[in-house]
Amino acid sequence: MQSTGISARQLTDELMTFLVTTMKTAQSEVFKIVEELDLSMTQLKMLFVLDGSDGELTPSELAKLVGLSPAATGRAVDALTRQGIVSRREDAADRRVKRLALTDAGLQAVGRITAARHEGLMRLVEPLDPSQRAALSVALQPLLPAHADDGTMCTENPG
Image (tube, rainbow, N blue to C red; front, top):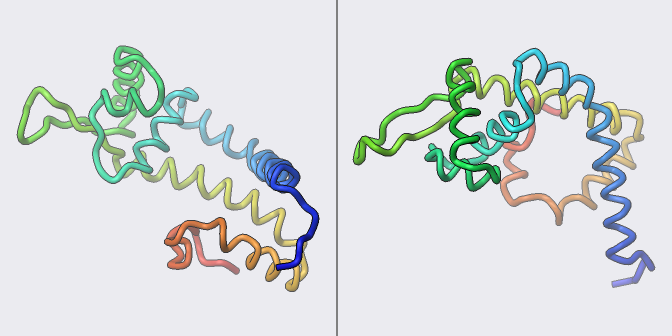
């Protein structure tokens, strides 16, 4: 393999610049959605943690994952439950245990934010010519999770 002379540090710096740029292209729309949904940054984090979980979480599991005290987590979850974004139910095996999950409204909120981020990224890649897009796609393949090939990472059909 031929060396390009680019160190891991240089590539990391370039990727970081790219990621910050992509986030900035969508930030005003994301902030608008977050404001419209009346979410705190903590609640926003909780939505994405719940969305990324493989099922329901207990309040203590959620607290650990977002780095909050159980009391602070409980207050945030109470607000999300009142808004209809998160559901809370008793565990079938132990009624003392509560299970948290996103409701349909919560899934829609995450979907709207993800779509806004997707559109911001689209604005960056649209100006590339087809050969640049192809080269970027090939370069990204080793960094993508294995399930990315099945289309689950996209919010809509590529156009």
